[in-house]
Length: 331
Length: 249
Ligand SMILES: Nc1ncnc2c1ncn2[C@@H]1O[C@H](COP(=O)(O)OP(=O)(O)OP(=O)(O)O)[C@@H](O)[C@H]1O
Ligand SMILES: [Mg+2]
Image: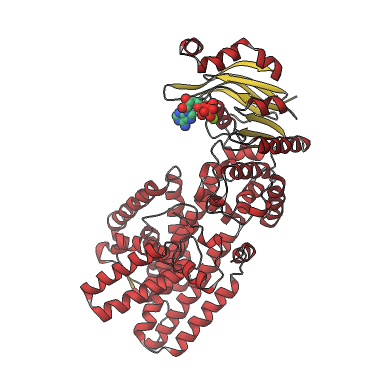
């Protein structure tokens, strides 16, 4: 494809993509009646928000291996605000994540001098620390390992099917919102600074970029968005929160989904979460526990080795509008 | 009036004294050459002036501002820009976007739209216009140096520190590079250039500062420096056996 076309891809409008996702999601909701399918897709939307939050931090070169910290803190804060203070879940869901936003700021501040694996290791360590804090000093508030029940986002005498659809639509809308947020950020002047920082902090700094404030900003925002995903998950799908959320697994998901879909591309986390999760659920059902894990592991290996730039770049190439910008890939 | 003033600047790495009290000035509008044998401390001096390294002693002022302990981005925004001896492009950005970073966040600051326009002009200026939407990996080393120059110019610098942007050029390319420097001078940019190539230093610099083992050993017009016995010793000494070198250490 031509260079000029590549430049056009760069300036591609994000609003049409957002609308297309809303319409597609709406059509599925209207057609599909199976509770299980709706639930899997609701999970996909929520975890795409979570993966997007990781992607925002990764865009600035801050590769977190402990994002469960923010997912979990958002969930706990929101569930407690709703349960103890009686805030409506719909409000708590957006107020609670201020806590992980602060945590993101603090961790970014402490890790300012760290990059790559070192940054990852320290963020990983924080998840363990936060888990201990939640269970011990704050155990009275959090009910220790037993956890807390979460107020439902949608309730009040509705049918289970209606609630499932409402959960689904809420998650869809918030996922599209997080997509617009990430896409706008990445295409903005700040996004250019974050990309420069990702590539080379010293050169970014001598080009006039304030590395410190941009790194802090990216992690604060990332913490907030991850927190919203955690809160949404607790108030809709799990209806419960326990310290298990600060486990390794929940820190790995956003990484896995984003890399499969396309790192540092706003569409990446969405496509990655959808494809990996749907394939995963299919494999679990079609093949059973042990065999499915083997197949899933192989499939992920194939995706990452064959399309290191992720499924989104693959799809974009196939559609004929992927430029060098998409192909220039992060580490 | 001097635009840049370094006083007794010292910087060491572990036990190695890379700069041992360097003192010199660069006047507004001047083109000054900074030369010296390998390891003399030329790049370290550039790093120290631009805030990449912090000196242990001494003071650096730019345009009357004390910049000795300022963060690199603050120094850049005051109007100092530099290239790197080994080109370090932003590898996930296009050539145009590389330059846009300098324009958007440099001394003048600019919106993305204005940064894109000005970056395109700068690519034109350094002769990279047709590579604007390439990735830096697709550029030759010489094109990468021009990209460094465009990025540095983009930040709206009044003082430009060039670290060996002419190494390895063919005579024809050198001639082009000389022209580029003349055009820069015409824009009113002050330049401190690190260079091994005496040919280009002699041709464009009004004044030359010579470093050896982190000390200034000579300073003057190209003719004066070329005739300076210390300079001759330093340069010949590095080629001869260790005697002269040890004496200088
Ligand atoms: N970051 C660093 N860490 C440790 N030592 C360093 C560092 N940077 C430079 N040095 C050492 O400081 C001394 C001066 O190095 P510098 O790069 O400033 O020399 P130079 O004059 O630019 O040489 P050249 O002409 O080879 O580029 C050298 O001995 C070098 O090995
Ligand atoms: Mg050097």
